[in-house]
Structure formats: C-alpha cells, structure tokens
Image (tube, rainbow, N blue to C red; front, side, top):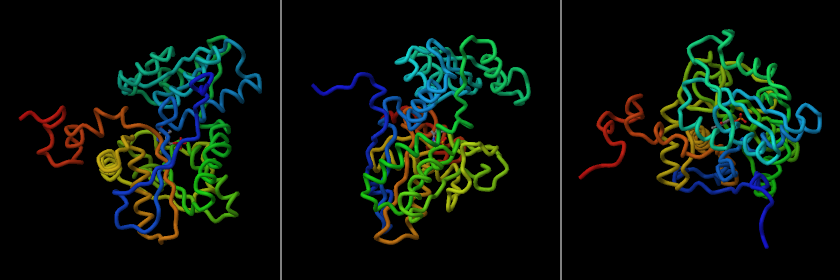
Length: 330
Ligand code: PMP
C-alpha cells in the first residue's frame, strides 16, 4: 500500500512546471516551482516543519508546549499543521485588517487567534508585536518561532528547496528568481544553488516598489507576503546578484495571466516573482534556464486580485470592469 503516516510527510518535493504563454517571445526555458501543492498550501510549510524540529532538539519547545507567533497567513497554517501532529497548541496574533476568512483557516486547524488593532504604532502595548511577546511571557511552555530571526527558516530552504531545484533541473538552472519577505527562501535556496554550482547560478530577488530591499522607504504597497520596511536577520545580503522592482499593477496583472493562460491559480506575490522572471528572461539567451518560485495559491485572494471591482478601485483595471465581480448576467 502506498500512503504516508501524516499529511505533514507530504511537505516539499514540489514540481517544476514550464511557463508557456506568459513567456511568449523570450528565449530561455522558464520553470515555475509550484509551492501551493504543499499540504498547507504554501512554501511556508517547509519552514514550519524545520523550526519546530529544531526547537524540540534545543529544548525550547517541550511536550505539550504552545507555539505563539505573530502571523496571519501561510506560516500560521504550516505551524498549525505540524503542531497538530505533534500535540502542541498554537496561538496566532494578527492585526484586525486580516480578513475573517484567513483567521477562520487558522481556527479550522485548531489554533487560537488573538486579534489586535492595526491602527496603533509598534511600540503600543496592544500592537501585535507586543501582544505576542506578552503572551509568550504569560503562557506556560510558550515558544515563539520568530520567522524573521530564526536561522531554521533559511536553513529549511538550503536543505530542501535548493537541492530539489538542482536535481530537478539536472544542474542546468542558470537563474533563480523569488520574492523576498523574511528573505528565508531566497537566502537559503540561493546559498545552496551558488555553492553547488560554484557561483554560476545567478540569484534574483523580486521586490514590491516601496520595499527596503529595492531601495524603497517602506512605503505601502498592496502585494502581500513580500517586501519589508526593515531588514530581517533571515535575509542574507550577500546572496542576491540583483533585485528587480515590480509595481503592484504589474504583479497583479501577471497573477491574473498565470491563472488564465497557464492554469496556475496563485497569489499576488507569485505574479510579482513571475513578472521579474519574465523581465529577466527578455535579456537572457536560449541556453538559460530560469526557475521562479511561486509561494502560494490564489484561493486566499479571490476577493482581491481576482475581484474585478477591487482591481478597478485601485486603477489596475479600466473602470468599466468595476461591476463584473460575481459573473456576468446576460
Ligand atoms: N509570498 C508569500 C505569499 C509569503 O507569505 C511569503 C512569506 N512571507 C513570501 C512570498 C516570501 O517568502 P520569504 O519570507 O521566504 O522571503
């Protein structure tokens, strides 16, 4: 019989899928590393598994302990799944701007969700950073993974994502493209690919306009999960050969094209990374092999990127599209 003991045993070993249509007119082979096929639906399952295992080994997380993390999305799902298997509790702290749907996903996995006001500065006692710190102090056996400073975040990619890509491309990859949030994906995968290729593989970060990685001031943008207004410890500045800046408009346009033209229903940061890969491909040759990592699924963004009214309200679609959300009525 062919089965796994638990759904978390399915984390990793994600496929590479060729991009055919959105890459028309460019010379290189462009391959997407499709991370939504992870059991929790995103690349973050990888770091959840590795951060928890390391904390168990170091004794920071003890049997029956509670995982406390400020997260509203993919990392929470990954942590909740691994916690469920191993008998830990989860408490996630998220700002009130996070949609009810997203909170309900975390609750569905058995996590507790604490909601904090968005409209307070980080130093305020009710800010979600401070509330999570207080909960760690107050809850007996609490442990905070802190994905922005946990070395096991990039290490999980050094040990899994990087080797998978090298093997899948039989060492022919020439460029790796990924969005940068905590920087774990690009730093860990990038370090592995550079080491194994003797520095031949070029590492290209994709970043929203306004984020610090591409020289911005931290001004707001709409694409979720990528870009920062500070420099996290998990981002290794020595890895990226280049950072390509992508506007919200381009990120969302390519996200929608990936669904319609490649049948890849993926999130906004995927469109951002793919937009960077396409821009890079335009100046590469026929022997180049570009791998672009797509972190999550588009299901979490149906009321945003895939909603015509929402897109039109930000000027990403002409106003005549503003009404056509739920389907056209004849
Ligand atoms: N896209 C999405 C949707 C994410 O949730 C994240 C993680 N914050 C990223 C991209 C960026 O990954 P990393 O944190 O490894 O840089």
